[in-house]
Amino acid sequence: MGMKKHLLVFFVTFLIFSQNIMALDFTDVSTAMTTIFSGITSDSDGTTAYRSLLIPPGGRSESLGNAFTGLCDDASYITFNAGASSVQKQTMLSIFHNSWIADSKMETISYTTRYGHFGFGGQLNCFYVPFTEYNISGERAASGYYSETTMAVNASYNFLAGYDFKGFALGTSFKTSWRGVPDFTDNDTNAIIKGSGFSQSGIAVMADFGLVLQFNFLKYFASRDPNVRIGVSAQNVGIGFTGIGSNFQIDDPLPTYLAAGMSVKFFPFLTVTADIKQPVNLLNLKEYNLFSLNVGADFSFSQNFSLLVGFELKGGNPRLSAGGQFEMNNTKVNLNYTLDLTTSVAPINRISLSAQMLLGDRGRAVVQKEIDVLYNQGLVYYYSSNWEKAIETWQKVLEIDKRYDPAIVGIQSAQAQIDMIQRVRESMFFTEN
Image (cartoon, rainbow, N blue to C red; front, top):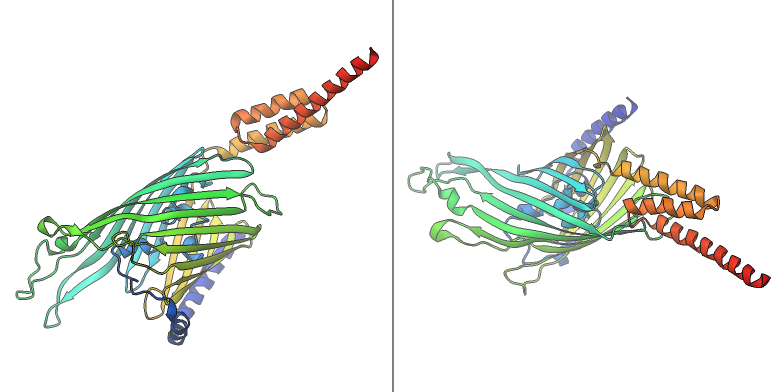
């Protein structure tokens, strides 16, 4: 009951905070930011098709300023790094809602699971914005929705995963996007032209590629999880097409980009993450686009609650975000507020939210408990000088996990003890003669 009360208090506080922030006039802030960062804009900004591929699903990743390439610890990894499905701790079913600009919205559903060191997942998202056409008299002539729908299927494998070095995970996602344009009217008759929207609709095919490294470095606290993650990814590598029949043609370039990121857990309660992303025009590799920077911080005040903040610098203005995440009854809920000075020339206040249902770890915790029991039993044998039995027990551990480094080191140490005693006995035998 106490956690539910804290959750309710947080939601109410968050909504009041968001409403007060949204009531403020950020024109002066926007002008100041534009002045500060005006030198880092590019003429190529905004010239790609399927811009919805750059819109984050919302929730935790956006709370961290979209600095997620080197973290990717929930189901939104499909948007950021295809290599991360094989390092997820839980099977997850997730839904995301992101209120974007000009009444546009992004709805996303994701699923991810893992068998041993093999992971796979899928994601479906839809970006949509109301469309209304008015005739010369100012009357509404046609209406509908402009939409971009993307489906992704992901698979990855974590190679050489062990106790100290957690492995390097390689993966890929295959994606297809459909752009739907509503029918519009004839300028002379004001009648809706059947199929006119379809002639301007389009389809894109692409792939993502990702790598995740996990290891411990300068770690001064006890935890099974690695405290350092490094991620590298190539996103939206493909081509788009528009029109049908004789109008069928290659579209503008997709928003392809290369990303590199790192997350470091300095303390059990603090994780800092950072990304750098470089856009690439696959239809004209000589065209230069400016990179973007993302940073975020996760303050875990308890096992069930975290405060997240983020900053994204992309183009002439930044994007600031803050959110909170609760975990209760195997469900993680995130509420995020973003002050967006990047997406629009005017300051935009946005809210996104996500709910992730944790569906279990497919028995990995049970296997880990079995390993712990066997390893500790081996230690009992070892300290009782029963080294043969210790080796036998730790070999059972390696039958379950061949890269469990403590068991490997224990066997080497026990064998060294046996070898030393054997040498002493041989030495005593020769002395007596």
